[in-house]
Length: 273
Image (tube, rainbow, N blue to C red; front, side):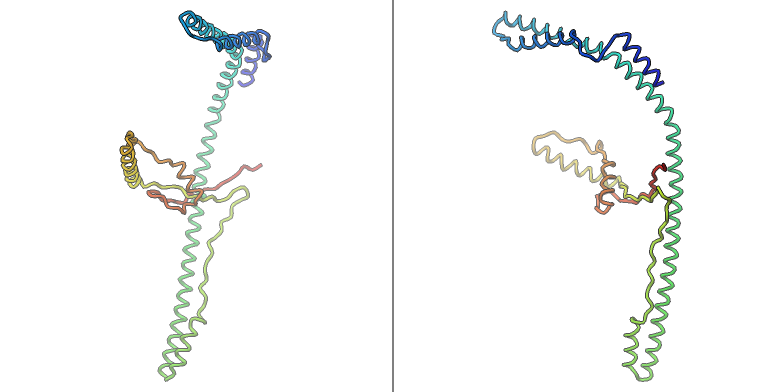
């Protein structure tokens, strides 16, 4: 269809005999317009006669304006036709490819949701295992402390309080270390990486309260200065796009009243060449 549009445009241009070159006719029209403008600039309106002359000049200027616009429009008409044909073709192809593109995006979203779900489950299981290992380590540490305390009490019963105290002091030094688990790293194929950003979750009730207070404050200030009251809070809207950008820049570390920052995880991918 794009080839047809190009062919039609070429034929239209040939039929109209149009050209991108400036002709003598074009130059003459512009020169006569400039002469009229210069003449009008020198006019002085001081009485009825000069007023009528000036009014006639206004008519001539308007007439010349329309003449030049008609010349311009005649030259631009084939281009306008071409633009309409191209736009028609563009809309056709955009609509034609939109369905498969939308299907791809839905497929990507559904598959990415499953990938994110699996990663979260793997992290949950890893954290669960890590917590179990920490609990086992803590039990070992407590058993070691209990055994040392038992020995210390035996020494006290034997009348050796100093040795018992020394044993208690050494308990912390001989205690087995608590092993700290490192969060598991989930590998992704080349061309993909896990992307986590902080996105805003708005508490609408609190936001309505804050907006109401803001409106009340500004209304008082406006009335004090003799100005009109501002738009009611019911017509105010949060700029969610700006909030989302702010969350990305600050990683959700800065508190915003009425907004809760939550993690949004996705799989960022790039095309494979």
